[in-house]
Length: 238
Image (cartoon, rainbow, N blue to C red; front, top):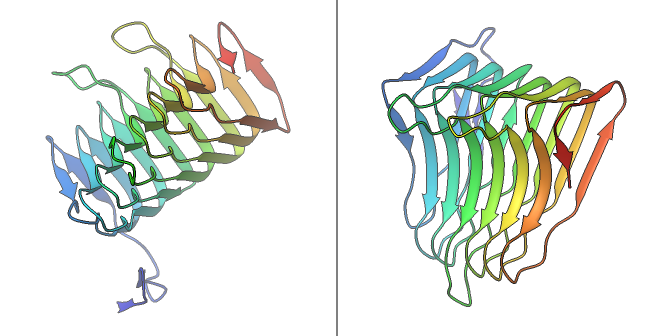
């Protein structure tokens, strides 16, 4: 393995092994500035697991990058970054053939998620990390979601989701809510923009794609480009 400035160089490996996080396993690189997490593998499966890199003080987070054949977040598993200080939150990047978020945590009933947050009321609050997902198929089920939120004065991150073939949002969480892709502001920071590009788009069971503000910050923009069939039943894009 040879390391570059940011990521290990794994081009000499012909095949990547599988990675599994189970039984509430946590991979955590949080600190003054959230550390870099880079995972490359065949199948990456999280069963009630969590991958996290939070920025706690004044250094920018380095983010989370995942490159694999398939990513499954099951039973309330989470990939998250956060900023709680003046340093920016780390970005989350996922590149795979298939990305699937489904299932509820059996104890807390929380959904599977990929999310970023900025949560500081200081004037120099860090921005939230951006989320980028590139895959052939992206499936959000059982209330699973992709979300970037500002809960303070820092601006929230943007979300970009691209699927070569298909995106499906379907199924409900324990409280009857559907799966969603969203940016949100809950205070004075601006909500990020949502961009979705896909072949077919299927949204059912209350699934939503939106950017919204419930505070004083501005809402972001929503752009959806679907080159194939679009199916919407009891859903919304806003």
